Length: 515
Image (cartoon, rainbow, N blue to C red; front, top):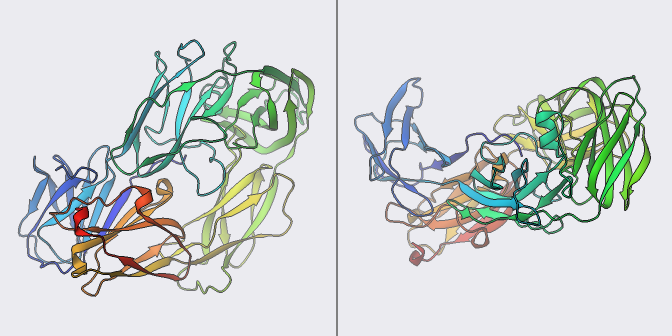
């Protein structure tokens, strides 16, 4: 799971029809309850002015007031611990402003063995639901989304923004244990493994829309048919260290077990469950920090093994890392000139857990092919940074190096941002409603929730959207409204936003009884 940045909830109130005054006053409430929030820090900035226009804190009723600021465009930032931060943009000062802050979610439970005894050293993760395919490898944990069980086997995950999450327990010689200490002890009868709640084949996803507390999400680790696997890595250089990882086809981003070579290249996995695995090797290892830190010009190996009993004499060969070239291109049928820069940074995020740092970044441009070296025989999710606010990667692309290299340059397709042009229908007064847009992958979105207000004719617009899945809902607005901005996903409409083109849609106004 990627490192959690501050998430923003953005309101655009310029078309709301509110009568603007020279004073700013409003109220901040909790989204899922409507209860007022005290001690919310409110920072007010005026466009074109470097210094703060006002620095406030809400009172016990959730209200704030900044008189005599003068008219103009303002940005309001509201923050409170354990809530998603809110940024409000005003075309002019307004009174009666209502801001709803979304409380982060919490998941708690216990990890025990067959006798109900806690298993020390277990790492527990909250992992965001992927757009498609299996869970992503765990990399940079956000505060609260990763923990270790205490002496009673209990865990608590917190600070989860809106989204859907699987809960994962990794025990024994897990990637996190090896990566944090350079080794791991395997408990007799438990061994090493990864368990997704309630099972790896059918993980349950917990929806967080604001304030959820999921209790008793308990794991009982009862492995069966534990076996040992040993062999030898053919070391290119003597007395160098390599780390090896075992992954399964259903969860390639979560290594079942990790081990390292001895000076002669021999290795041994102890007490692993029976099954079919991909065995990977990475090195030379120069240190560790969450995962193995590799030296320059690394080598990698990848092969298949099937474990039904103790297995010995497995030979692992390694080869030099691969190099692939990339070039920036406009998506077919899209004219990104003006919207997209000629230079950017491509990111390659591994979808397979090698227990080593194998993610890579590199420069890419639209004129000349650029090479990225030191790539593992893994599957990589391609991403792009430094595209600006009006350009995005045109589609999700996976670079598969698991079966061999790529001779031809890989095109990185970009296009102008997507948008929504919508209309609210069936409303006597469209300005009494708010339209909320929620990114399905909130963890990786800079703006997981956006809210706009339709104009008098019911028209509304969302611009500068990153392509991908979203959920959209219309709710009554205003201080009297109790309707949540972030609600149950089943009550929202799911849409797919494409790059470089507007999405036209009509939304029916909800009944006012929903307040």
